[in-house]
Amino acid sequence: MSAVQGGNPRDHDDRAGTLPRVPAEQTGWVAGPAQAGEPILSLRGIEVHFPIRFGILDSLLRRTRGVVRAVDGIDLELRAGEVLGLVGESGSGKTTTGRVIVKLTRQTSGTITFEGKDASALWGVRRLRDYRRRVQIIFQDPYETLNPKQTIGEFVAEPLEVNGIGSAEGRRERVRSALESAGLRPASDFASRYPHELSGGQRQRVVIAGALVMDPHVIVADEPVSMLDVSIRTELLRLMLDLRAERGLTYLFITHDLSLAWVIADRIAVMYLGKIMEIGPAEQVIRSPHNPYTQALVSVSPTPEPPTPGQRAKRTILVGETPDAAHVPPGCRFHPRCPYAFDRCRVEEPPLFDVGAGQRAACWLAEGGRALPVLPPRSPAVVAAVAAGSAATVEPG
Ligand code: SF4
Image (cartoon, rainbow, N blue to C red):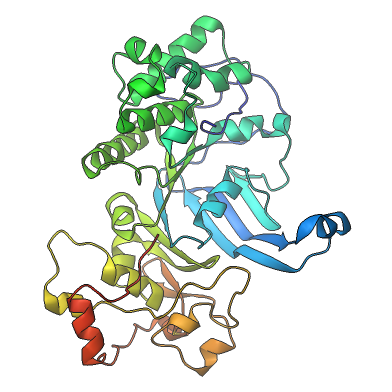
């Protein structure tokens, strides 16, 4: 599947950059663009709970054996023109959150507001057309996203055709413009090629063009560079930032890699087991984390210089595996792995406390804006294992 395909052809505002305008059409759902820095998309109290059922009988009787709490009550706000990095391990709920935003997954509860309009109950192909045109997604794997039997031009044009946007000539022009904006020049050459004729980086550029052709305002980028070589990653990240500057795009950048989020994001939100553990300006979150989980991620994230043995020894070691979302621990869900955990953590879940400068952290130790205390020294055996690189540290995956 390509970027989410849907949308309503209508003139709307001046964000489209070089893409030609398309004729107006009413769908009954019209939102207005947000000004830079204003909230463009907000999630409030979003939960995504999947029932656990065993076998056909459970399905027929709609009998549930438990619930997977993939997303467990989050508030998140995207501001127009920003890159919000959503960081977390595998199973943290970050991808599900992205899918809720583009309406590929239905929330169990909570509200979605986009450009000032309530989009929570917006379902059905026709009613979602306009929304999906404005809110696109780029998936991780360009190899899976592209259809090997389609030319690049056909792939990029498909959402326009599906939604009846523009004349044949107008569509060709939009495809050309989108391909060139994604750095695939000359567009006419790339449009006639097939995916197997392109490199991995070029394929991901095609996927980006497939999103751009719909003239979106928000792009959910789900691990968009994680399958690419490091050198190509940089080019793609630069392209995304250039497109933001040219078109006023807003990104939710989903990644397991905190250092990548640091490079590209204006703000960072850290997720763990379906909850936001910390959110704030990227520099602030990285340099002064107020949640022990964020602190652990920061301590094992790559830095430009190789860490010294002393720095390696300061890595925060988290004990144990992430619990699965069907068995969320009571109290603070991070407490079984938290080196700071105390009695209150085991029974009461902390809210996000304001710790200043736009940063908030879900930790009882951050109540009142306090900084994290310094951990007691680890045992010599653990320090030696970390210095040798053989200890289990937090490995986002
Ligand atoms: Fe750790 Fe307690 Fe803070 Fe949770 S609330 S992160 S267990 S110190």
